[in-house]
Length: 322
Image: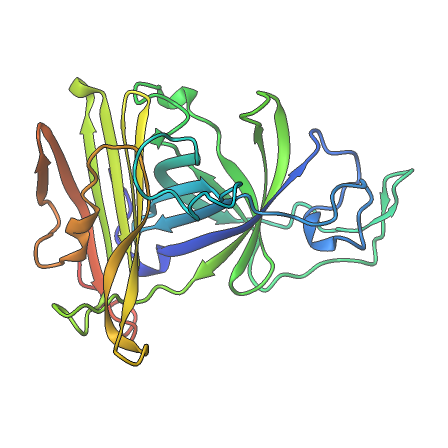
């Protein structure tokens, strides 16, 4: 499935810090992005504080293949911080996987402040500048927890947005789509923070490079699809049989010595599991076991390693082991 050559600059680890719904269609003259102006600039009289109801993480590999998992945070005090024992998908907001693309564009909303909401005119003195180019991004959904495996590509959601680089590590996404709770269109903004992509030293490999790995399962005969992406110190996977979904998230954590101090090596720990199907995330933790083209079999299912890329931060540009 990969159509791009591996490039570490394509890889990213993105955490969502808030989701902010907006009316659709937007009233004329609405400043976009809208949420960064809160609470002082709020011409539509919307909630003054953006919130984040989920733990949302996107891992994108060196060939722009991604796994996006969004899990609801606990509502009741006795609920676990994140579900990690399998079972029902009550806490799963959304999980999907596919490929991403983006292209720089002119700022489509260059005048971001309303001068007079009644006449919807804008203050032409407030032109904006960004630390990096504004981009139009799109994400194909090859696998989507809200749609059965047999869903045709034409019936998958149209997922695209305008990406505003509000800082060197923060990107605000503005998009429009169908609200899954109502079935009606809405607009929204999401603030994403890029995390550092770091190696995951273990006792077996104390000085490893950074790894980007992708495993894929595509079994039309059994109506099953799955994707696992490991990037640096994170790994996420999703597998679906029909419309039954299983997701996992793993994170590398440093070990502690007897004094409670962090050591230079660590272990992988599962932090999210919903559903009861097998996911081969652990195979990506042992680089000597996995190679590009390798197959991981579990019962009648066969996962293929489509990508295994390694690089070190100290290497010069272009020195990438594939």
